[in-house]
Image (cartoon, rainbow, N blue to C red; front, side):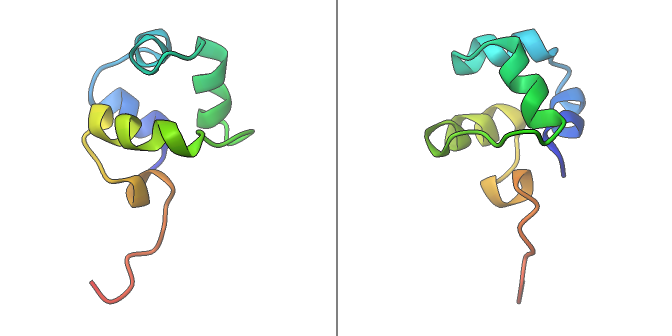
Length: 65
């Protein structure tokens, strides 16, 4: 799952997600185009807002599960 698809699934705009996380909209845009990754301290809240796990956000393979 990528951040853009997850954000759209919950019906948020980039600006709304940015506001929730205390970042600017261009930061969310960079995450979505994979020009940068969210800081580690933002991942738990990002996953909570988007209703997924951190592993899903980062496309970590779910080995053995």
